[in-house]
Image (cartoon, rainbow, N blue to C red; front, side, top):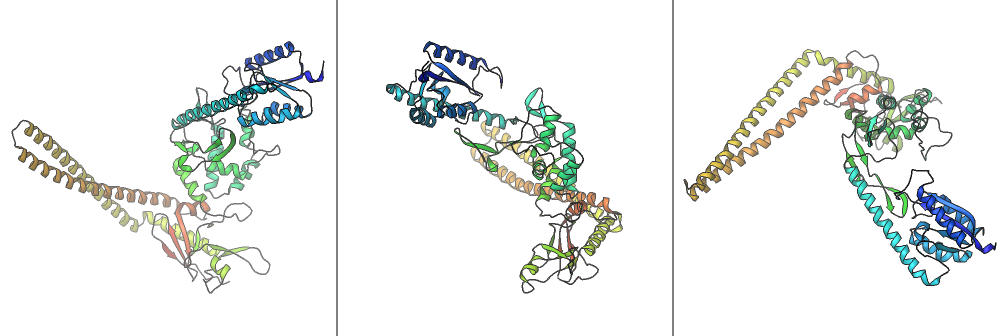
Length: 536
């Protein structure tokens, strides 16, 4: 057998082909291609030097495993002919058709043959037809890609979950693979992560806690417990512990409140595999599509607290009680930490960041001792909490009752005005009917209608005003009740925690004399003096 008669058989089945048996199988289409090409090689007295078969691979890319192996073997001179069912099986990308069929292969002395479509690089006369077919094949891929994208967008807008794998805490519904159902064990871990974060633990510390408790990371849990053939591209073989990024992702995923958010990324083009993040206004968000693991209020608290810049102190790895919440009352910049003198690295308190970086000509130290600050805030919280059932609170309840009476009064007025507007609308209809029956003249009809319209317009303006007032009163009432609910649990506390601080306090400002202003989330600020001024 002559060396020049050695041939490589290239077989490819794309993801879009309909006649597959299943992923990973040597499908019927691949088998048919193999039989067809082997028969062609035998008929033309070609020796089969190798068979290269890519299953489930798009013809748009030349990064197919077997295709790449075939190109390496071609450069090693293992064959002189490449036989495929058609040019489109070899490639659907016009750029690759030109690169391989019309440049690299001729330079390597390799001939390409397409059995079905008659493509043959040894025939210079059909080069133009090969190029035209290359364009048609690429256009086919472009149209198919756009059709698939449109179908996917329609499914996304319908709230169907299209991810290949489920977020940790969920599994796919056996009855509908585009719907998520709760995995109770993993959902319990998710709830624990949210609880620990709201208690003040940092993301890295939460990961350490879960790792020490022997809780499997999501990728290993999916493989070892759920039996899913799942691989995370960011996972290393040595990865066993929960990472900061994993905790961060879980704390920011809206899937846990029942939402399906998709279309966050898209390919640059149908010929480019790279994913580019979409602007948020291009995301497709559908709410309430499955059972929530985290209630929306808890989720929102977590989002708000992530906006605070916190730093862990102490062996426990929890955030400082006041991290991200303490500011200079004058320059409004954050306070920074102070440490003991004489080589001591003990954390003692806070001072103004501007003073520390730019000196006393710009701002003063505003120094405050950490322990004194804790005592002052704890006393303030307990004092506010005791007011819930004190005589002062009775005055508050009286105000709430007055507000409630005002709400009731507004509701009654709104009801009466709506009845009047309805009555006037009926008058308009009757007047029109009288005009049509010629019981009143056109001049009388127009006069009545002007009066009715003016009256209705005036009543609608008043109605809108009362509705806005009612909404405002309802908001105030809800906020006051929420404030009372939050404080009533802290009447007799002995220890201030990060969780309590984040729950009740918006921010703390330190004055030049060392006193502090506490801004509660549901109350006007109160000025609480520290027991003594700390000088740096």
